[in-house]
Image (tube, rainbow, N blue to C red):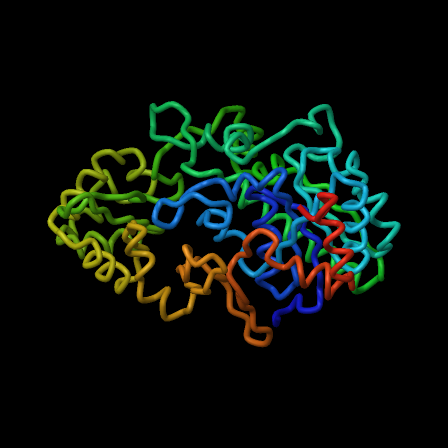
Length: 406
């Protein structure tokens, strides 16, 4: 494997979405990620659709296969004494350990940082629980969808006069995974300079709040809850999504300053609007935003192809983009030319070779790649127990009989 983290090994105790998102980022950067699972308690993500041809199977979940690219997978019952010792052996050979159980669970399993650092003193370990390892709610179970309203993000989401709305996805999960990967890389940098490992106590709830700091500052400084405003912006107008004449097609437009507003009015064929007292300044446009949006949409409705508007406005330096359907994104020529989409053969023939979202960055000196599709359960058992740990066929058979390899 190549990449800036080539040579780094990660003991991956994670499951569901947040943890696997973290370890996938590390795998994208070249780390060898060894994911530990058990058939006794199959990862929730493996049991969720979409399925190829509607055929449910723990190895076929498109959800799981997206967020576990480039990893190895072994089946190990870490609740058994033998399983714990094998997990510790892996950690002793690793640089990083990642877990996203509820607060205190890894410690109860005998796999907390105090124990693991005994076998690997310079270990970097992150526990990315929902609420952190301290505080009165540290032992609570949490999932990403709940973190959205808990963080206050739902209070900010929705149209004027509407009730709070969910953001449309389990935002807390991938957001937490990205924050966790950043923290791990920072700790590895610290270890490289000092030789010291360390423990990272991360709260997924806090990571959800970290991205909406301006809302808390608004409350602190103005003593009022920020208002929901749909697609509008306090700092730009017009700023929103406007209908075109095609079947359920739209165009997003964001005008950042007075020069762009003047340019837009010219393109609309109504240059007089630039000096209209209702719309001359940002404050004027915000005060008359309903009327402003009606005028803009009366222009966009003259087009059937939203891409025509996108090209027209982008050529003039105005931010505009078509809200794309999934099928359009998958075939987008820009994404294709940049090599964003990844197609790797999967070990389950029913899955085959599928297109997945790949790595969203390009490094000039350290090539990053998805070296293989997400693994099926136990795909790397022989390599892990036989080659890496040096166990004989008889030892592996005995552990399988005992339910340790499960």
